[in-house]
Length: 574
Ligand code: ATP
Image 1 (cartoon, rainbow, N blue to C red):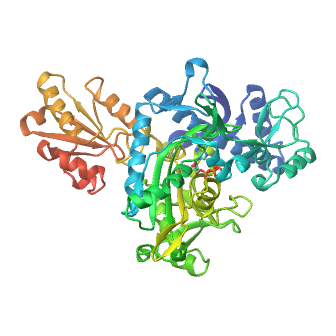
Image 2 (spheres, rainbow, N blue to C red):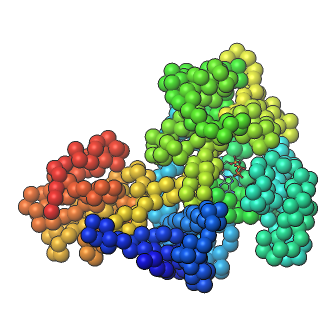
Image 3 (cartoon, rainbow, N blue to C red):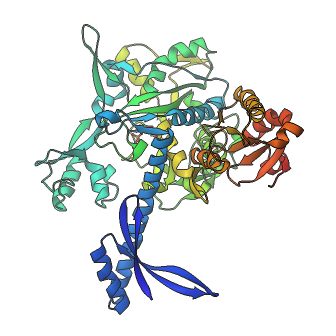
């Protein structure tokens, strides 16, 4: 007999049609259909289903709608869960909450800031560390107007905007069109966008009012500096500061190419419609590496042998499929130069091998000529499949920018930026590896969020986890606490350690699983006698016993994934 049940998910009601059936002597409940969000609608739908009134077409339409709604609930609830844990435990929250917050601005709490620092550290090690002639520099976020005249930002750094004539709500026209199922809206001109809005009779999403013509909106934040109010801008990318530093750094290092200048810093864009969590912020962090090289050497790289057999996961602009193609095939058949492919391959390794992003969630997407900036001769975005945002989303890019930037700055400043290298005078070309740090942090939260038997957890790789290990005495008493404090203090020299002596052991494990702590170390009766401790692994719940004197070395190996958990100590069961 089928019956209606109501489920409360995040304070919203959802109705289902369930049925109890006896299977192997046990009564089991099976969900027959999703009935919608209102009691009245659910009763009507249940009646129709029970009387078998719906014909096949109606049934399949209803099923498709159910699936869509259920998917939306799942996506919505995953975002809600991550957001709720994040503000409760200190990953991130909206800035200036007490004043109502402001769209496009977030604050990282103590755990979020450590997660971000850990990501940046891995980026330094694995991206800036790719060549001994790559260096990190630090410059300014406020730069003079001339810089952005030279770069083309003042003229071209625009997004298409439309405005409701009734309620004056302003929003991005291309995103609005994509939300209304217009494919590749990003590649339409503003005149074409206006025409589509008229033709489809699209109205304001807030009040259904008529929409204005689409016009360009410049995304730069202008500011005025000093007594004379000189015009300047908050930089919309870290890249420009690296181009400005090129000549000085070229001579301060060894006058050698390729030269890499990396910057991790804030970027500012006055986004029309900040949304999608960390994906469209107005103030965000970028980690960008500008590699200056001799264009005559674009089809070579001294370490080409390391990558030539690596297969890259690529979606070309002309294809709907992701293909896995080796670097040597991409070079010979698709004419992508070796210098570009070497770095693209290292970027893919960073995501798959260092950050542990599952392979099927990663792809390079080629941008077509309309989508990419006119000066980018080759442009692939790095995209990751995110449940919370419902598809592949851009988190980084590999851009061959030619000599566009250095020649622009040469012209506007009147300073010759050519260098003498390899017996000739050249204006170097630039390959840019550009990463949005905040988008990468959201990616980690999305990919590693999981729901286990005991509740929610983040399965961060140990090198990324904000807390590397938690230490707790499981028996009350000074002698246990003393050992625990010593263990925690010794490990603190190298790792981020949390010491916790309150609550039941189960609650302490759950609290740490929830913030992604990969290992919990417990001190018990035997620790006093045998001078050993138990380590519990978050992902499996398995436990091993190790000597206190070996703990520092074992923890280092576990965090760097140099040893398998089961092999790091004696298996231990209660
Ligand atoms: P989009 O097309 O999504 O607007 P973009 O192509 O303009 O991004 P780039 O100028 O290539 O982005 O910037 C480099 C990186 O900076 C992007 O890959 C992204 O990770 C990050 N980024 C860009 N804009 C934002 C933003 N508003 N909020 C957060 N991160 C951003």
